[in-house]
Amino acid sequence: MKFVNLDVAKEYDLLVQLIKDEKPDSIVHFAEQRAAPYSMKTSKTKRYTVDNNVSGSNNLCCAVIDSELDVHIVHLGTMGVYGYGTSGGEIPEGYIDVTLPGGRKANILHPAYPGSVYHATKCLDALLWQFYQKNDQLRITDLHQGIVWGTNTPQTIKDERLINRFDYDGDYGTVLNRFLMQGAMGVPLTVYGTGGQTRGFIHITDTARCIEIAINNPPAEGDRVEIFNQIAETRRVRDVAKLVADQTGVEVNLLPNPRQEAAENELDVSNRKFCNLGLDPITLDAALFDEVTEVVNKYKHRCDPTMILPASFWNKKRAEECASLDPSSVKIKV
Image (spheres, rainbow, N blue to C red):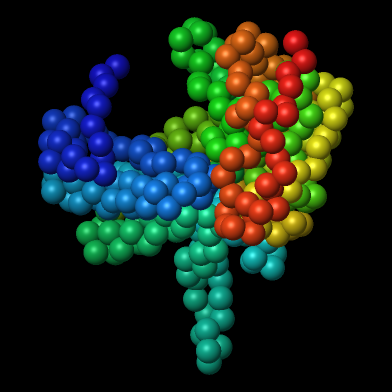
């Protein structure tokens, strides 16, 4: 498998030439700063996230146009573009039916309601996709993905060198993987606020499967941007914590929330498109947690306990409320 190291957001000419040379049928666009907490850490990380993510997406669209090739762009977005619990019902897949003044009916792009700079860039991406589809007839699929958990797919588990990276820290670690790591290390689970946040979850195997389905089912030229909700199920964070705590025997700690978000929310999400195309979603199952726990136990000597507590805060008020958190207080039970 060929690898080319280039910065999509900065090395535009190299990107155009790469597309011309490779002549791909599809491009899967993952080249973005991927973490909401990191995007909120400092003014520098906020600016970097916007510069990198939005410029990279715009460059990719321009490069496909300049290559004069018919390339299908598959972009990894986020469920966070919708906000959480703001639709007043089931969140549809990308587009929502509305009644305009005068009783006119329309189906429009779902209003954006980002909860971080990272999520805001994904909303800006969504507008870029709409523009370039309308203006240049680019074929684009946007995948609004939930929180990924798990470490392996049936392919990567065949060789240790293919194991996916495992982030457990407060900036890059996703919530369920963080809990599983903490449980395996004997560390109390770090639940933010009341744990009443409801979020969408998806196993990494399903992530890979959804991308495959999207590539194999591209929109036709002239069709509007295709949007899939890439999740398997929704769960409250405190319920997920209880699953892990019951399995591992560790305590659950309710910490001050470093994020500016609703303490409790409902979340009902449609994922019918992927299911109709053959996805049989993997749901949260304690038996599947064993796979992650095995990886944690094998590499636990690499764990730095001072990285477990949150280190990025959404605003000054959040930082003040979390001031009592002491990273050095976290102790691993070997």
